[in-house]
Length: 127
Length: 435
Image (cartoon, rainbow over all chains, first blue to last red; front, top):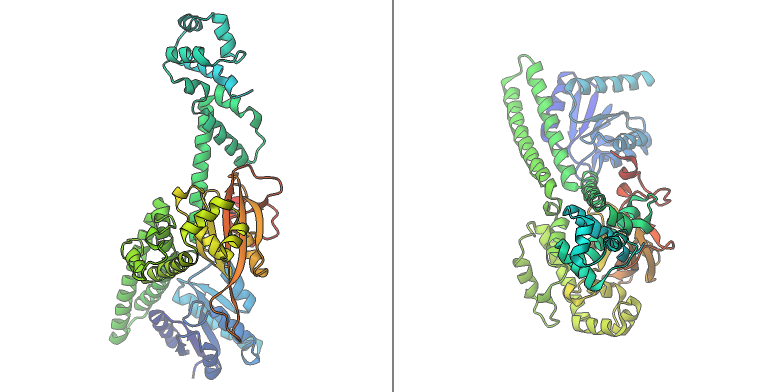
């Protein structure tokens, strides 16, 4: 069984594309499309990494990240933030809230794979 | 040098323009060349018959020599000097306009152009920073591009991709390309309207604002306190600016409140009180027995022909979000995003029911000063166990004189405010930094 990634994103075609490339790379991909209960979903699935979109229905990705960093069981969980807004203030906000990495749409598949691998390997090395 | 003394300069300029010799003009009007020379050098005053004779000889109206368009131009030059913030010889503006009318006109024209461009920058910056439509359109485009890029890379980089996946990804690309087309078309259509900023209406709030502006914030059909409820529907039915359901709902709410205000304070009573005590909000509220916010709204609804000049109004809810705006010349208000925190409109929220009065000038605009009257009042029904909701309202009256030193300097919003060293600043100004 590969490492588990939880993709929290509400755009169906992006979900399908990212799920496909990660699955072909050996990852066990779970998806969730709503911000409201995303934190519960993270706790329930206990992934090795979360890919989290900023603009989600129900709740902002920044709020979700803040909650994850305030809870002991997810405080160190690698989180890759995705956003269509590459503004400095969004980057700074993501950094301040404790995002492991921040990617601006549009991104390449290779970038996503590289970052996912490096975040989980970095986590493994740190533990 | 007084303005009347400059008549001589204008005579000389006009004579030179007609290639008329001084001696010839002097002879025509029956005076000596030396006396005309003194007049032309503004050393002798001129008026009455001689002025009329010279004007006839020079083929102009006497007023063009004694006043001309220069009174207006001198006023515009003074405004340009005030807005430029540089040291200019204000006391010699008359002389400058008289001796160098071409240069004076050029300065006035440049100043007008600068003001127009500043307004364009303000509106565009406001939109780029806060416009929800622009933000949503860009988000849609980037999302579609991301999906297309990711999916097409899979199709190219995955040899032997199963037909089922291939079909699904082709379908996804087709969907996303359609979405991209629609988003780009909407954005292009939106940006096409930039040339005509005032006409480029997009958000429900802007539609309502266009509707109110067109009606000059006054609805004669609703001014009858006995008017039937369906008059509002008739007013809305006759409008073409309110395209969306949201804007119609906002306009409906505005007009319902307008009708409530009319019933509480008919225009006839308001005008009579204005006639008796003048434009004094405290006295008017007391005499008419209405709350301040309602009085402010009724004053803002005065028709232009009432003769009380331009009256501005703005209100906000407890979050500071502007909910009704009636800007006036020299006192613009942001369409999106937060306004200047120095406005007493916001200070009133921390002192509910306390009337606040202040004389302010808009920073860097040199457009005179304004009296502002603000108050925050509870809104909606009062109920035990429920938090009280407040709205703040501010009336803005232009003051017909230059800003006094004691005037508080305020802005429109931080992003487009040139004021230096402001403790209330939230973010840097693009006017200070430039693009």
